[in-house]
Image (cartoon, rainbow, N blue to C red; front, side, top):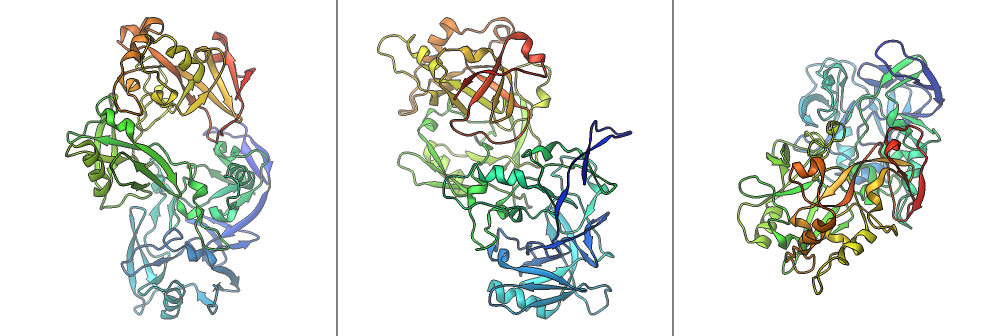
Amino acid sequence: SIDKPHQPRKTRQIFLPVCEVKKLFIYPIKAVKGVEVNCLEITKYGVKYGVFKDRSWIILNEFNRFIGLKDEPRLALTRTRIENDELWVDAPDMPTLKLRYIEQIDSNHNLISTRLYGQNLKGIVCSDEANDWFQTFLGKPGIRLIQHHPSLDYRDTNSDQRRSDDKLYPIIYQNKSGLHLINESSVRDLNSRFTEGADHVTYENFRPNVLVDYPHPWAEDKWLWMRINKIKFMQLMNCNRCPVTTVNTETGIKNMETLVALKTSWILLNESNRWIGIKHEPRLALTRTRIESDEIWVDAPDMPTLKLRYIEQINSNHNLISTRVYGQHIKGIVCSDEANDWFQTFLGKPGIRLIQHHPSLDYRDTNSDQRRSDDKLYPIIYQNKSGLHLINESSVRDLNSRFTEGADHVTYENFRPNVLVDYPQPWAEDKWLWMRINKLKFMQLMNCDRCPSTTVNTETGVKNLETLVALKTFRAPTGVTKKKGLGPSCGVIFSHLSDGFINVSDCIDIVVGENAVTSRDMTFQNKIN
């Protein structure tokens, strides 16, 4: 039985039962199929079954670099089982490989070091038989299997600098930490959001140690403390995902549907490391982007297609630079020369670079221009104000009706929203203090004041200041926003109170009224699609 505390505290905790453990798994070889077991020993360094420790073997290439599923998807076709004190590994058209755990290191053993997720760690090179097996199966020379030994150093938990106590939780070759939990109802919910006809995933794609089936998807995100069989566990973090999860465990083929929602985490800088936006370079409005598998493809007039991949791991070859965005410093990884040359050519200016944020780097606070005192609670990346921006299309129509005769009209694209609605009453969204979409709650942070970026015609790349002229006639700033010299507003900025997914055609529930913002038991009304 799994319990969670009713009120998590550093002192006495009251745990409540929530569900039972459905399955347990151990993965003796990192990136190779795991073994389902009926019990796990919980140790300081991760889980253990008999002599076998979780992720205590790892596969390296000829350059001593870790080989994982994202490098060799065929590893998903392996099958493992524990027979007495041996681990048996099978794969298509291969004999069974039988491995024994090396209990004692002697002078005949060869130790080599590899760098894993930013930390160096040694291991014992396994037998020629084991190395030959993996070289034959993967069709590549120089591959070796290495095993960790308790006499060697361990790694710190890898929380990407989200915690200051990583050293207290040593691990071996695991990615993040010593125990990983998946809720099967969350996997079902994820599958329900795939495009029609896409291959679904199972819990096996996520390689958990503990599988539960709690009825509420994603509820596990909030299990700050957990108790199983009188053993207490503290949540370190949610587990961010890479292309490993996209490999079909039956075919060994990647299906990037799992990671289709790439983050808006790139930004353009000039040679002085200053941010470049549409108001500086209106021609950026002529670019078009689309998502193809795990890449973002960028097109522009008279330019070849630029194909970008999200950088999952930072290594010593990457160059980090800092820039100042809306008054706050934030770092990023300089992208490839190909990407930088593309933007330099398109804009006709040298020194331009594309940089990408990474979860291990610091975030910015929500930028409310000091209209709120809780900005630090809602971290963002390179966004202007906050994490979610909503535009009501009827408000855009009303704005166009106020333009002078013959002026070019604007569309919702000028305002670059995340969520577009078409509520019949223009500007009603100003009063949506709370919003709920697909069971996710959003809190309004502020109305979004506007700058010349919104005036650029998305078809021609030419500025038309009619947008701001018209907005100022009836949406001019008042009060504190006027004192700060901010522009007229159009659109609403929200912050989400939990993680999850929203979809096109989801129903939106709202709370209207000054007192609603302090109410815990909110009554949502006015359903909108």
